[in-house]
Each structure stands twice: as C-alpha cells, then as structure tokens.
Amino acid sequence: MIEEALIARFRADCSLDPDYGPPLGIAVSGGPDSLALLLLAHAAMPGQIHAATVDHGLRPESAGEAQFVAEVCSKIGVPHAILPVTVEPGNTQAQARAARYEALGTYFVHKCVLAFATAHHADDQAETLLMRLNRGSGLAGLAGVRPWSIFFPEGAAAEMLLLRPLLGWRRAELAQIVADAGIVPVHDPSNTDDTYERARMRKAIADAEWLDPAAMARSARYLAEAEEVVGRAVRDVVQDCCTWEDGGCYFQWGHARLTEIGAVTHILERLGARDIRKSEVARMIDRLRAKENASLGGVLGRRMMYRVSDRLSRDVMRFEAEPARKA
Image: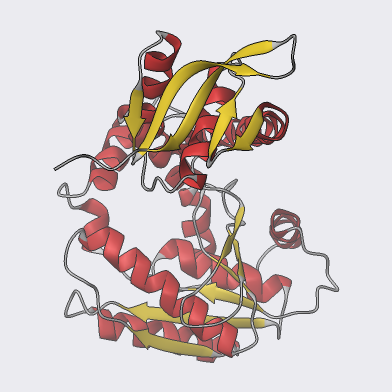
C-alpha cells in the first residue's frame, strides 16, 4: 500500500482532485520511474487508469519487458496494451522518442483517453538543464521539460494533454515506491551507456555530491516561468511595433534583447523562414543595428526610415522576402 501522503502529493502534482473523472493514460516502460508512476496513479485514481508500453524492438529483451509490464498491470487491474513501433534510422534516441509519443498518443486517443502522463522526474530535469547549459542554450532550452504540454498525434485528429507530474520527485524515492510494492523493475542498458550524452551527464551528477538535482529542477521551473513572461512581452511588441505593408513588415526596433529576438523570429517565420536558430536571429539583429543589410531563411532585412505621418518618420527594420537571385 502506498502512503496517503504520497497519494495526496501525486494528486496535487497532477492538479487533479479525488473526483477527477476522465481516464488518464500512463506510459510505462518497465523501469522504476514509470512503474512508480503507474502505482501512484492507480492508487490516486483507481479504475481510471489506462497503461501502454511501447516496444521499439531495438533490443532482444524489449518484447519480454513489455510483457512483464502487462503482467504487472493485470495484477493490479489496470488495462494495458503493448504498442510495437518501427524506429526510423538516424539519431536512435530521438527517433525512438518520436515513434513512442506518436504511438502512445494515437492509441490513447482511440481509447478516448485525452491525457497521458510520463515519468520525467527531478533528476531527469537536472540532467536536461546541465546538458543544455553545456550547449549554450537560451531561455527556452534552459527551461527544460515542462510540467505539461499539448501534443498532436499525427495518427489521430485530436489534441492530447501530456502531463509530467513527477518533476518534483527524486529518482531514489520513486525506486523506493516500486521496491516497497515488491516489484523488480527492468533495466535498460542505454541508461548507463556512455555512448549517450544523458548517460554521461547522469554519471557526472552522481559523482558530484555537491550538486542538488531537486534545486536544479526548481531553477528550470523558474526559467520556464520567465520564458512565459518573455513570451507575453514578445506578443505585445509584435502587436504594437509591427506594421505589415507592401508584402513585408516594418518593425520599430529598440527593445530588450530577448524580446527583440522573439519578435524578429515571429516576423521571419510569418514571411516563410523555417528552422531558424535564435542565435542566427540575434546575429541578424546585430547586423541591422550596425546599419548593414542581413538575410536569413529567405528573408531580407534592412534599416530604413518609415514615414508615419507628414511630420514624423521612424528608424525601422524592414523585413521582406528575399528577391530571386539573377542567374
């Protein structure tokens, strides 16, 4: 039996009350984190849980591990499905993740389950934060994994609410919940394989006893809140400082750097630019501030004076589709 205090904590982290009605999907791999999520959700919302395990087929043991989860679910009375997927070539972990979310989303939608949870926890969040710091990520990247997001599976005409209720929980306390239930979880060797960046970062954090993953996870949450504030500022600037005329945009510049990068990114994407990095946008803005022309993603930017009225002109950045190059 799981302690009532843990059940109440889980309900609060899910933002669910005891009378929550719709069913909740649970992604269960068979590892200690996802098994703890399954046990907590079942205890908090008995009879309202649907579980699913994705078999990526990347290891000979995967089919047996999925069957193990099916047996655990059968013992506690939770409906369960095994979802085989094919992982496209390329970045194995990224492709496996994409296939996993698509399979889970499509399956749960077809079961009329429009919200499902994954077992990302505080240690995962700390690893993500350090990896992105090491790459020089901006605010959006440093905000890490969000407590919830909206997900649109391609295989179903519906949107899913993706919950991550364990971001405030430590890996060790989740493992203890599983051990107390008398369940021996499966072990995924990729979690300790130095081929993968996350496994290397996990070992580095474990070796640095002075690091506090729970505190790092809180910092990621604060950064996510800061990103929301910046996002609102960007929307205000786009609304108040963009004039769309003559097939392009006149942008009244001179804002805080993060806000300006966000606004210019919005302008570029509206003009057809795709897959542009914030660092590239920042360099474009720097060139325009220096009164140099700049182009990015098929969009040309230049400084000019824009006539607002008969008596007033403003120094603006003009963005428009880059003209076709002569042969």
